[in-house]
Image 1: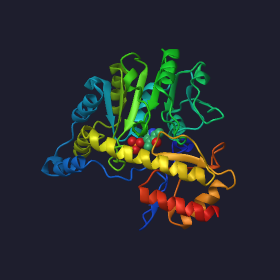
Image 2 (image 1 turned 180 degrees about the vertical axis):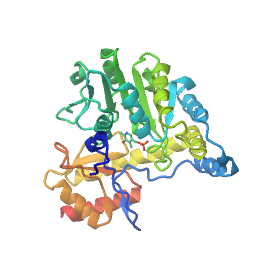
Image 3 (image 1 turned 90 degrees about the vertical axis):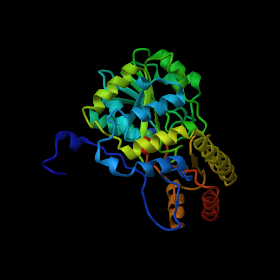
Image 4 (image 1 turned 30 degrees about the vertical axis):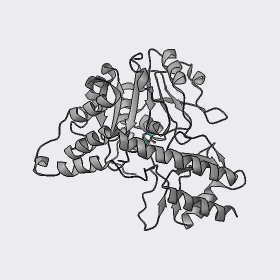
Length: 352
Ligand SMILES: *Cc1c(COP(=O)(O)O)cnc(C)c1O
């Protein structure tokens, strides 16, 4: 608290990220980082970008990154916006496209940065409860609103919505922007990018942090109708004209172009996810069906916070949210096979 703070700062509820602990031998399954490294081509491109050319500013238009995204998804450059992480892309989206007289709708259990951005930008939000199976029911969104944002697959549940459900949501709200946050879509979800040609109210946000294993690079993007993208550009160029440096731009282009690396590593994570879910079910856990690089599970006979504490004593970190409805769940990122085997052994020891 400081008397020098603005009223806005007094009212903020900042996001709490998962812990970034450095410790030898730590099994870190708490922040949905990818256990496999980024594309070697991306690493080489970044190394080549380090040199005298850093004297100069980076391309403020992010043209090379936009073109890489456009190539990958069969879009035009004008349909792509690029930012310094998808969190930043989301922040600009909240300010540019989601603040209206009527409230923003989002799920009650979802990415907790959404309420944080609402507090930052003074946006009124209505949190729509997930159904009893922790799913988003798009019929629950048929109410007056200024805009809608959902994560698909949702976090921290991991549950995905099929494309027809997204399409129903878009068709029911032709006058509202509908944002689909696809941070985890490459792990088995269906991307709404396929619907862009038919819905000018759709904005899809993706990140290089999860499936492209570049959380430390901080690159994200949004795709949508050129008018939505132009709105985002206006906010971005009123905030920071050069959000991506040359190294990030070079790495992002190579990472997006190396689709084979992304698909191979994502398939490995999907296979490990199936193995881990089966192992945990055998130990008595309820495991929600995940299409993400984590699973969300609870044990009917053991307290989630206690399990998390027991894992921590064994140098394994998972994420526990002290939030109503989900405080008996643990969110466990999919690590390597070896890391997940260590987790299962530790769970066996803890559960007795
Ligand atoms: C990880 C995550 C993001 C943020 O990704 P960054 O690009 O690393 O900022 C956005 N949305 C959801 C749902 C996420 O889980």
